[in-house]
Image (cartoon, rainbow, N blue to C red; front, side, top):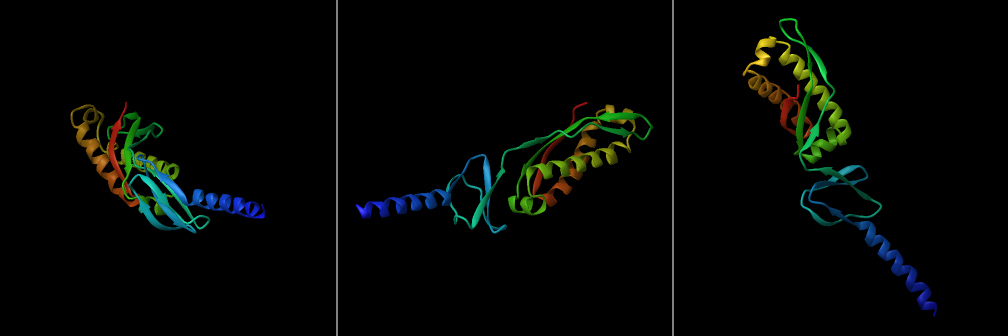
Length: 167
């Protein structure tokens, strides 16, 4: 009888430690295993994984294509016409370690990307006339904007899939 009183709490404690050491990476996620805040392992394959309980924790990042809809921005074209530009972007986290080190989480990344996109829109669209922006050259201007934003986003481990103007 005394043996049962000792074995049952030990089994429960072992079960709890096993529960804390296992985690699941879903198909839509990628994970970074951190040991005291220091990245130790990047997991990009879905499935059941193991970590050291109480010492390591896991940060999950989305591996899907994410969308960003920054606030509309006022741009003055080269012919002094005021434009309200409402753009959106689609992006993907391609380097989870660089992403985690440079921006930390998705909220900060969205804020930085919105700033970069608005800055790039102002610099490219501000050099063009309204007639050029309404013509077929608009696609070329959007490609220039996307290239510039992508060059900046690579520093964060992000790939810009698409940047478009809604209106």
